[in-house]
Image (cartoon, rainbow, N blue to C red; front, side):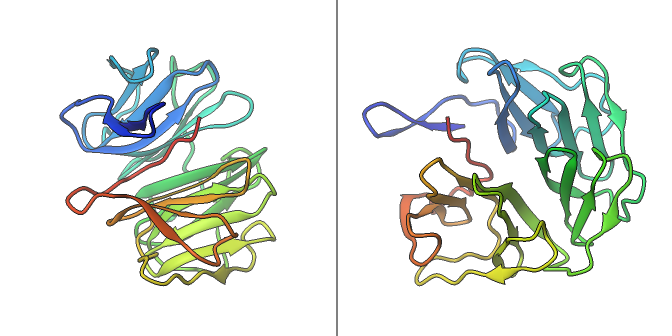
Length: 232
């Protein structure tokens, strides 16, 4: 885990010795880190120390954690589908009805609307907090690597074949292009209050300040793949 310091330098926040997949915050401001094979870890001191946080989840290969506006936690596992908790991780319930693939890579929430990207069957959508899922009609790619909803309500998706935006809750999509920045396999997308788009990829961390017209690399990591971005 890396964080940007007050002096505008990137510093290592922790060395858990596991492949980190996702980083988010819960309703209390705690950091939640998903790992590949070791479950979830929680930090209450901005990443200085971590404790296990996935008791009750059977599949420990976790690619995604999402906390919605009501504090409900959604966890995407590779091979076990989606679990949710309404009591901050004390109890977990599986919500996989309608999911044709349980290999979950990413989850995004918008009220009761949920979006789940898989590694082999594209995008799934739920309009009732995950009780029932349906397969999105327009498949961007079988491999959906990242999902996020911008402050303006638009939905962004990273896929194995590029970066896309939807202005109608995923019904139709338009693609982005970029000079010198590889937008394929965008592992994380985050958009700040100014509308700046940040993406994590195999090459590092890139940013667009003009709605995706042009891009710049702001943190190059030639030997390390960035899997997630958290803006606080």
